[in-house]
Structure formats: C-alpha cells, structure tokens
Length: 509
Image (tube, rainbow, N blue to C red; front, side, top):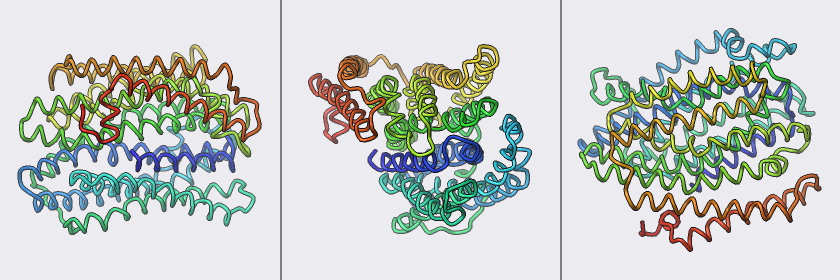
C-alpha cells in the first residue's frame, strides 16, 4: 500500500502539473485522449489481464513443478509478448488517424484538435510494449512474494515521466505553450520504459535469466493464453467504459475531457492504494489454494480480501463525495486551471465516488475466477456492463443532457451492477459468503462509516475551505480529512475491527 500510494501520489502530482501548465483546454484534452488508447491496451494486455493470467499460471508452476519450470514459462511469455506487441504498436502508429477520429469524433469541431491528438497518439503508442513487459516482471516478483519493488516500479514511472516531461516541455516551449505538450508526452513514454527496466535486476537476483524462447506447445503458455482472452475483457471493463465516456465527452465543451480525467484520477488513488494492493497480495494465495484444491482456505482468503477492501475504500468513497469541492480546489485550482473547471471536476468526482467501492472490489473478485479456472464469468459480466454503459450514456447525455454528471453516474452504476453479479457468481463457485466473522466485520465497517459521516458533516459546519486563500484552503481541507480519518479509525479500534489489526500486521483476524 505504501508503494502503490507513493505511485498514485506522484501520478496525481503529474496531473496537477499538467493542469497547472496547460489548463483545461485543447492541448490537455488531446494528450489525455491520446494516452487513453494505449492505457486501454494496458488493461487488455498488461497490468490487468496479463498479470492475472500470468500470476495464476506462474504460481501454479511454482507450487507443482518448481522455479526452473516457472522461469521457463516467464521467458516464453516475454518472447511472445514482445513479438505480438511490436506488431500492435506498428499498426497503431500507422492507423492512429482513423483510430483517433473513431474514438473522439467530437474533437473535429475544434480546429487542430484531431491533428494534435493523432501526433500525440503516435508518440505514446509504444508505451503499451514497455508496460506489458513490466507486467510479466511484476507478476514474477509478486508470485515469489516480493511485492514492494513491483509496486514502487509504478512510482518510478511517474517520477521519470514528471522529470523528463517537465524538462522536455521547457525545451520545446519555455512559456509552456502548445508545443510543450509534446515534451510531456515523451516524458510518459520514457517513464514506461523505466517502469519495466527497474524490475529486471531484482528478477535476475532471484534466479531468473531472461532469454529468447518461444515454445508454442508449452502447456503453461497455452494456459496463459487461454486465461488471457476472457480475462483481458473482464479486467478492462472499467477502461472500456472510460473510453466510451471519452467518446461522449468529446462532444462536450473544451476542457470536459480534462475535468473528467481529473475526477477519475482522484478516484483511482484509493482504488490503487487499497483495491489493487489487496488484490496484488490476494491473487497468488488464491492461485496456490486452487492448485492444491484447498477450497475452504480459498474462500476464506477471498472473504478477507473483500473485507479489507471494504474497510479501506468505503470511508474513502464517503469522504470524496462529501468533500469533493474543497479536495478538487485544493489539488487542481492553480495556474491556468480555473474555478469553473474545478467545480466541474468536483461534480464528476461525486458521480464517480458512488462507484468507488465497486471498482475496488472488482479488482479483488474478478481475478479469483482465473484462479479457479472460470475466466468466462467476469467476461460475461463485463460484456453486459459495456452494453449497459453505452445505453445509459446515450440516455443520460443525448436524451436527458446531464453532461459530465451523466457520464460518471453511468460508470458508477455499471460498476455496481458488475460487482453484484461477480459476488453472486463467486458465492456459487467458491462458497457461501454468509460466514459469521465476515458478516460481523461488514457490520462494524458500516458503524465506522456512520461515525465518519457524522464527523465530516459536523466539521463542515465550522471549517469552510472554499473561497479562501490557497494556504487556508489546503489547511482546511487537510483538517477535514484528518477529522474524518480519526473518527473512522478510532471507532474501528473501539469496535476491535480485525482489519485494523491486519493493516498494522498484527495476527488477530
């Protein structure tokens, strides 16, 4: 969590700098739209689906056949991945123009916006190659129970992309005008390369020797590919829905894409910090329990993961909803980013926060189906969710004209429907959720959230950050966040909630 938290914080710093120097306008809209394409492919081939398929198979190889067989699988996957993605990157660069026009048709109404987005897309497309190779090394290290460095690798990406991006942006345009956006784009690309390379020495020190190897009839490779197909769609549901949102947002006013992205970034902070962290630690255990046919242990481990995720993300969702305006203003309202843009971002943040818990729980529950050999379940759920997202977006944007709020409410609603379907399916496949210690823990979490809500509503009666000078605004927002956190964790301690002990690495459950 510390490692992922540092990464997400640096990612937020990068977004703050982009908003400060470029503002919510054509250039930043184009950069976000250009990055969205390889970012979607990242979930299809890299951090989402590939990690799930590879970690599941690699962990089973370790448990049954030992390190040598598992390392051979890693080399096989790396080689095939490099060849396949090199072709995808080449095709993406060649056909960037029609791809951008297909996904962002509304950009054509602003002179030069399509052309700029196409150029930035061509710069950023190799990003998916670096991130996919990094995903294999991340899965390898996680399966060997080395979690810190892979998580810090994302922090390396953000740090390098900030440093290189700022330097190149200043070189291209010292006033940080339109040409500076190219520097920021190249910075992101170099950051992706850094995320991959930073993990290679650790993997080698643990005995892995990278080599060129492609054995098509390897059972492990076949299993990875078999899991990768359905898992890629299942894991990418949120990103696909974000792409659909981007399609509809491209028809909205200049800067809408940027405000939507800012809100999604804020939501991704607790999802990455808590949901991804819990899922990263949980998946290798689920795969091992499934390989050894330990059904009760598998169910209990999944329930612990779900409970931990709820314990950490439910208060975050409540806090972001109630404090959307001061949080957004304190983080983004600087330089060229206006008060109006901050208000629009806060509106989007409230919509997204309704689905935050669902997003995070999906990170834990969806990969469990790969561990038990049922990857088709999240695939069906995700396809249904994508169809619903298209339908709801059309109704709320084109029929009821709710704008950005309609986009975020649709995404949150679909995520909630998806996790309910996954929970029901896992309940049938893994075992009953009606376990006394699990239900008791959920009840205590709800009581803690009641205390959090009361503390924040009371604090807002006395602390008014909005409309204040920057230092006062930030201090007021921090005070409210600390007040809510204190009320929540103090209540958890009084109720002896087991997840607080797990968070502090104590043995009680």
